[in-house]
Image 1 (tube, rainbow, N blue to C red):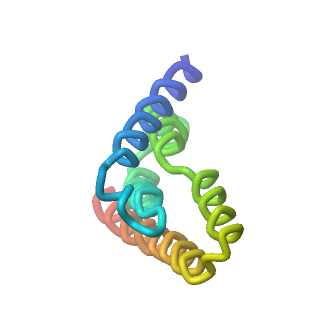
Image 2 (image 1 turned 90 degrees about the vertical axis):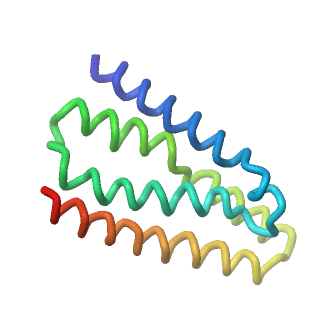
Length: 119
């Protein structure tokens, strides 16, 4: 049952990620802001959920490992970085990397503050 819950959450997260990445606005920009948006949003939601859910619960498995694991995407982030590097777009590479890492950490911290205060 745990694996089914995990798979269902991951599938929902991946589908939502695909829908967001398909937004027209993200296709018009010079760096992959769709992936940035997803990873920052996922970090924020992770921060909220982690202190509210018991680590041994099915809801934790569904949300943290399943949904947010399927929603966020470090592999796409890495692939985007490699593409920018190969294309010698160093300014965009630095900007993309900095924005993603810094604001994901800020979003996680903000989410944790909210999650802890609600818990």
